[in-house]
Length: 532
Image 1 (cartoon, rainbow, N blue to C red):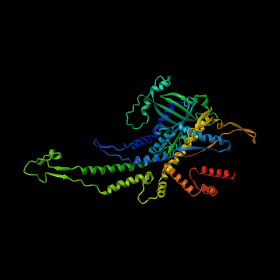
Image 2: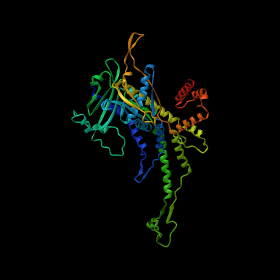
Image 3: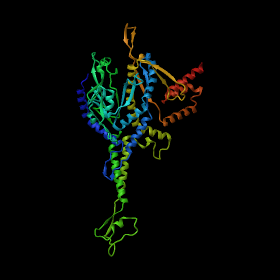
Image 4: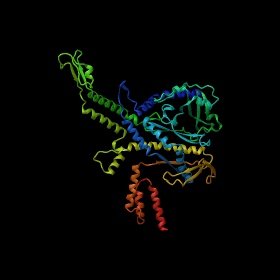
């Protein structure tokens, strides 16, 4: 059994080391909610404009228009059938886990805090106790690792903390007679709008750590504990003592980083680079609005010994204002003049807005706006493609993280799919729901069975290795319109006429567009049928 006291000391050390990151994440959440400005006084505050939020929302929309989908390829011809089955199976498992929602939450974290995190676990209680893969978003605020590492898998220990109801824990684990909830007070939390009471909560710790087994192989063990009580530990179970929790030997966490920082698995995001510009915009906007308010509010100097009735003078509903004495002197009352701000300040705030758009890559052209000089559709599209390079790079990094998620999914299938399971396959482009394909799958084809090597005259274990490529599950409407327009243009050029099939094949081979290979295969098949 692992030493929980040492684990608690390590966790405390990890928490202290990343205090700056924790504070930045909490503050970034306030910026995202437009709560970053402080009141000047009880009745006066600096208004927060939404330029920063709009930039984040646009980038998130771009990411959601290109949700990734996996395709599995085999490295050996004998594994082709398994690869094709996995290509059908992975999208089904992603659908079971409501992956678009997970992807959306991870992207929100990536934009706000610079780092999103996936958790890819084996849930033994899923599928009516049969067990299945579980993918969920992991809050980086509650994930801890050894200071100074660039990758989570370089850390000898990784901790994940969640608050759970004390009564629920004691009900699930009746052997716990008393539970200390003091640790819940030290758990990192956001600044919630609601009054969140954690007095009845306990911090449940998932501790992943690396050890070497009797053969010298490094394996990952898992220990769940709360308040000093061990709830589950793989080191104490004979079936996991030598192999660890997962055969793939990695932690079940995949980080999706926007802008990498050395010495940490985390990075910084779009919100971090826009903070200063947004604050300057808000302060300048406040100064301009305050000047407008002052100019619109008429105020006066009145002598203390003057002859004007101040109450009547201040009440604009009264048609008469009484004075005392023989007359109203010019020095008794005088309006206070407010000097309007120069146009240079309006130009300055517009420049700051332009700076925020430029640094975030959220130029007007990327959201569909152009100046009056650009009117051609092709020119507008070219500008949009050029302006979206930064977003494309961010999406590409998310695809790389998603590829790691899929590799872990394949390894979990290899380890745990020991009994046949039935899945229904429906193509996302198939509108006829009556036509269904069912597959029955278990891991015997990829689990590493012993085979005979005839040339060497010995047995060896074949361990299939797969490559995973990522493509966008769905394209934006403009991309679809572009492909439809190209199809019409090819048709008008006579590409699809039987007499032009050979030249059409050469033309399409030189082009690069989505669905090109499928179109080429159809042209080849049509030529074969014509020959026969």
